[in-house]
Amino acid sequence: MLGRLGLLLLAFAVLAGTASAAGSKAGDPQKRHNAADEAWAEAIRVQRSDLGAGDWRVEASSDDDRGAPKQCKDPDFSDLVETGSAEDPDFSRNGSFVGSGSIVFQNERQLATAWKRLVRTPFNECIVWAFRKGAAGSGTDIRIVSSGPIRIAQLAPRFRTGRVTVVIKGPAATVKGRLSFYFAARGRASVMLMVLSFGKPLTPISESFERRLATLVANRLRR
Image 1 (tube, rainbow, N blue to C red):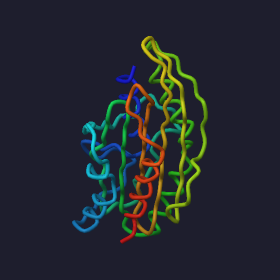
Image 2 (cartoon, helix red, strand yellow):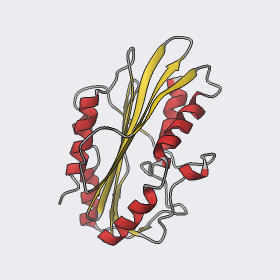
Image 3 (tube, rainbow, N blue to C red):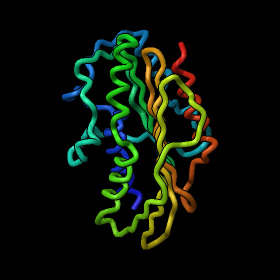
Image 4 (cartoon, rainbow, N blue to C red):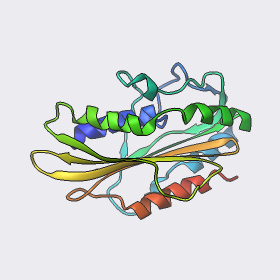
């Protein structure tokens, strides 16, 4: 069950623009990286040290959004220029997943343009699609409990959140889970955080720790 969902949710990381590619693909921003902005982007995203103790493992990323609904595919950013980005690694721990990615654009105008395109994506709808696709044919039943924004203070001038909670029933166990996302942008830089957590008997991520991670990466947008 979790293997199927894990693969699917890594695919959703691609849809959200957080997974890295072996190279550029159609619609990606033009890459004109410089050392300073590349270092800044690397510093913004979640670090292994941010996660604390635990058996956190590095997750490989994919870059294949084939089969996704049209509205869930990456927006076209090919007319924009990124000067730094950091998209790997992501981390998992016994039913939990933390993924993040950051991009620095050439100027604030370009980030504003990218943000307008990004926020048109119905991310909650795409998460529901991802869960349902992951459960299809796996011998599990999935029930969507709720879908909507997260109650949290605005952490950056541009800020958007969403969360889908589910109950997944399989032959061995029934577990409740949630997938949360946070988009934040300030100046030329933006960051996305995605947190997947399943309850016991797996190892969930507390909501307070999730908020801490969101606050941490949003604060790192300041330079």
